[in-house]
Image (cartoon, rainbow, N blue to C red; front, side):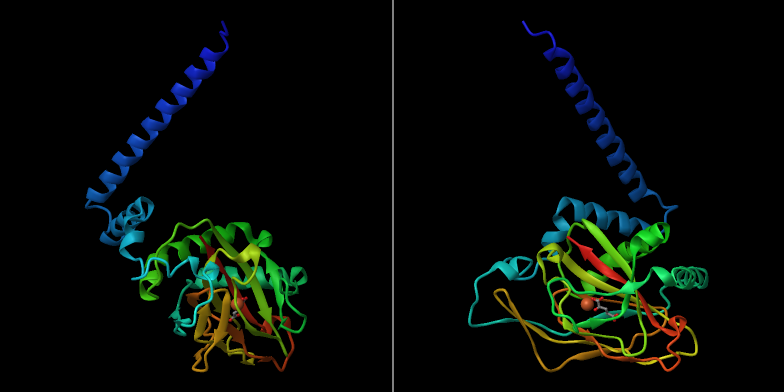
Length: 279
Ligand SMILES: O=C(O)CCC(=O)C(=O)O
Ligand SMILES: [Fe+2]
């Protein structure tokens, strides 16, 4: 008889019980929080939305009319009637507090020598010209910004009429566009490694008075036909306002128009903290 099997079994039962206790405690905590009138209504709504999100109920409520519409679009076979994503975005002004803005500039300026020329996965050269700072250089700050972004995510998804989804990762980087920099028409989820990008965000910051011209972001109506994405003509223009953040559907084609920065100083660049919320 193999006696070894019992300790393993007992251990498994013990961890199952521990997990059940944890779940039960967590449920009690959530229940209490929902009924706690000392918490603000928005805090309680945030908790309720999280619960609905995790349970899948919220997801069902927000699904588009055709359940096959999204997110399986890219894998579906080509049809004669492409689906149109209207050019659309949300812009929120005054996103960061003065202290947070100061920290943002500090990170950009102190890491000047760590910015490197940007590239594009699987794309020809000349698609893009700018500099990038990897998130590894601002770990703590990453968590702070990530939290702020995730907090407003439900509202953004509702306003963009997008279904909610479970977040696997918030990707983040810092960029600087200086004189002559640009990013030609592209799509952010075009590639195997980045296919799970759902929502694009771009936070803009730069010195005052504005030390550059140009650099507007154009977002194009995007036709989806099977795996093929093409653009329509009626683009919308985003003015990259200092201390504003924008959000848009990562399937949408867009471009950064050339930046003119007469001084050519790094500190006078059009800066962003930008990235993608992955499902
Ligand atoms: O800087 C911007 O306005 C957008 C940047 C962008 O499209 C990207 O990094 O993929
Ligand atoms: Fe992009």
